[in-house]
Length: 249
Image 1 (cartoon, rainbow, N blue to C red):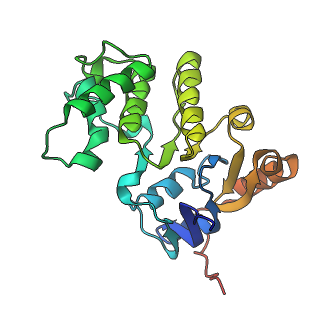
Image 2 (image 1 turned 180 degrees about the vertical axis):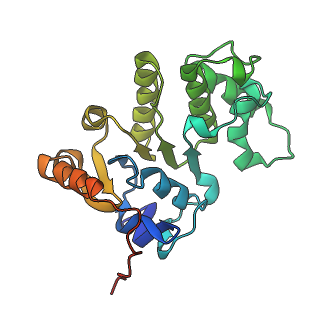
């Protein structure tokens, strides 16, 4: 019996002020797939992940999780959206990854503490436990966020621009973590700007320009014709245009 896709979209539109940011999207991220979401600035890439998490309402359609509970979904927002002035230690930040399992008001078990230390070590931050997140470089902070995801142990991992403003060594190390998740059969979806990075590391690609341009094997999705179409659609965007009245049959 074939397992249902962990994440499916059925005529999904997400709009700001009635103007679509994601427009009539239908398709699925298959179980165990590793997918990059790419497209021009303003194409709806981050909006799509926020809609999956329930942070934005849908204008049309529905999003289905095939047997995936909320606790089985890990979401990494853009680093710029996280307030690093909050006085929290690295150890406590990583421990947040266990809250979906143990709850907010229960103490972490000894095993959870051990797992948190191992997660930090696996991203190259052993010995950083007592530092505050405000003391860290951009790359170190992103490593902490990945350690938190490791502790969460989710089946579906959503990453919004995980490699922005970090150094090449950190990017390579975090890509290794992503490949580890993929090898474990988790479903991983990442918004990525670097097309070369996507071609090398992500077998599947969703190319968005508000509307889906292509979704499938990366070599097919990122062919020159599809990239030209995405660029042309981006150049034709008119923020003052009337809202779309098209609906699925």
